[in-house]
Length: 374
Image (cartoon, rainbow, N blue to C red; front, side, top):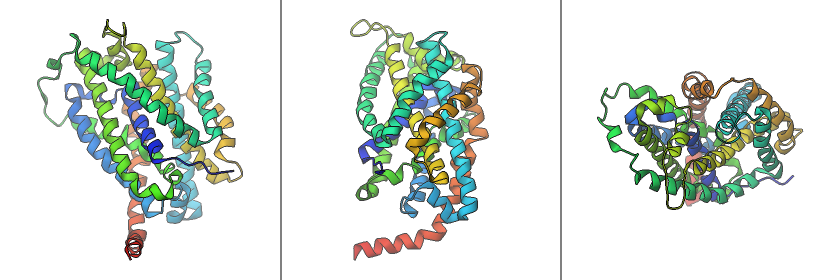
């Protein structure tokens, strides 16, 4: 079967949509209060360094698959064990995000609808897209990226020109000092920036001639995603205030619901829902693809396209048994994951892989660069 490929534009649009989905769904900065912008800017810098480490791992291994990288460094047996752990991590994150997204739909669009039906409706286009090939997801991201931006711009204009938004809610700056922000900065670095570990499974899909430009495209994508994250959190604090932002289940949706516009739109929350659905679709697709690509390398008999349907049933089953309520799931995503699951797969293992890769291949990469200049 022909290998799916992604262009650099598709890669960058996927990265923007992947990172920015956290702003619209969870508002991870809610616990930073009025100083959310400080926490987010610092975490963006740290998150960029984290992504650079992921890129460096890929580059040192000539952008091999995650399976090839782990096997090369740890051997077939231990490499396969770590790959199994990563496939479980990616699939668990898929199920968790599926549950959170389904909760949003149940609360905002399909009140009291059957949860299994909502999850099925979410998974059908994802499975269909992966059966067509991950390049189909990439082509969709190029188009829908502009739709998300066109939906987001009216939100920003309407909010910042409305009477309900107030910059006074951000004062005083650092009222309790910098120390309370440290945990939030750590959390926001891993979630969402650390989640870009997924793109280690995407690097091999990029064209060989464009791999030297990956980092440049990635930095632009991270900057744009950070602007979206920052705008979303600032709008929520400026409209709801610190107290309400912490207490609402979906502060971004509730904040947009409170803004009335009489020119083009009477309400802004439909635009917020469109943004949530589109960004979460691509994040779900990438997490699901990452898990399937790891399993594909382990089984070798079936491709990720063939595995998409049976594993989608498993994902729905896991999602149904994760938690029973949207509030529980939000707090699990923000508080528990960064403390328990995320550091292992986003920080600890990648750091070990990076150091071993530098030790093994640093001189080899230098030699290749020297030969290329001759």
